[in-house]
Length: 340
Image (tube, rainbow, N blue to C red; front, side):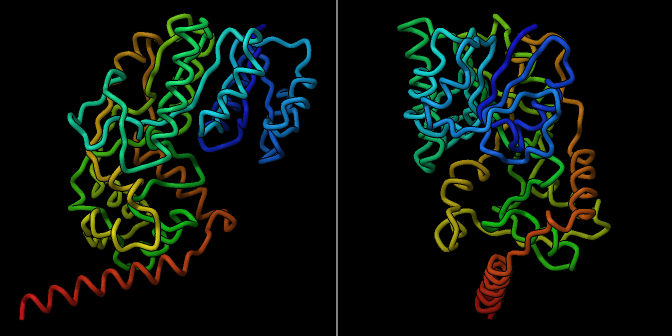
């Protein structure tokens, strides 16, 4: 039986992998977790409640264990990967990093993204840190033969959330609420830029296919759906599922980034404002038969049904709501002024 260790393992992306892998009789799964969403973790998963930054405690807890795959889902800066190398070098046949597709070159030179697309993002520190993490691991692979695999998710969602173009610090519920209340919602640009969204269960299939896969060592892969939608289509789909007609308010991404009380410079200019279509040929070569099967209208319907049934997932954001109204009012005023 193969052994896997996840650092984290209960987030939007990783929970789907945890649940799917726990059903595979070929794998035994361990999680290093500080106690998040423990009630959802399958019983046959071994949970080590610890802070990964407490290296001595983790080292003692893992004494005598070796792994076929170790994946860090919560590493964001190179220092965290340096820690992982200290802990797991010589103890795993594969060290996997969750990076980000936002690391691909911005501004976009070609809307078709492959794993060979250069990495650079002057707009977003998060993306630059992920690029630095990747560079650290690939240097360790070249210099010392550390068996690494880099995974670049794009916009991946689960049954607790839906993708929207602009939201506040408390997530997308307030946008859903505005649609339900027949109020206008903000859409960046003219809403025609292409975006790729992937349901987390589809992501999990691709990820597990790369675990202990010899073709994945020393390589980077993005795992995404093949479905590219405009932001208008994404919001229209959500509204249709809710039984509403979308009332869009299109706003320049530059305007939002410069005037919002939120950090939209990175998430919009460095990511969502760019049309991106991912070429998953490399992933499908490494995992023959892989296909993302859940179309957006299917995944969004699953998510919205779950969100509406669970009030704890409906986090109000009155500050974002009020700011949205101010933006819409300002645009209406400008339009009336220009029209005389």
